[in-house]
Image (tube, rainbow, N blue to C red; front, side):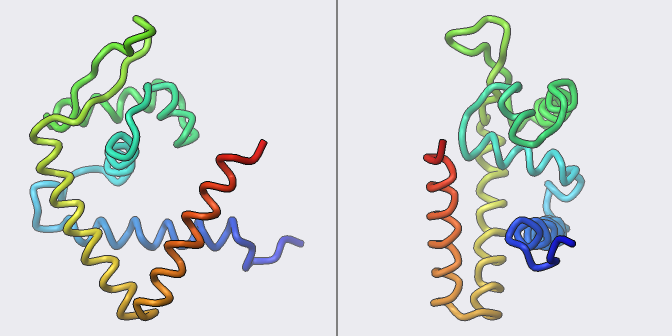
Length: 144
């Protein structure tokens, strides 16, 4: 039997809770109607430019589903699709000026979320959590 407090499960549970809180924080903004999956796609695009194929892999969805999500973001005017410089088949979503404004709103929401985490855990534990997650992410990226 798999223990319920395994790291993978705990990270997934936390991700779900943080995503739900971000949906709440978007209420009352121009981004309130954005689908949670599209918000996650926008976050990935904002963090690191990558092709549609790589975005699909990162989210474990089909390339067609990734394209549909990105297309909705294009229709909102927050991203454009540009051909990859080394590949005329694949495209890379790019953040637009309107997308930068949406990122600013998301940044304010993240600041609010992190303040709530500090209120729950204290600033020291919040920063320790950030450091541990950062270290683990880096270690996993460098692991063969």
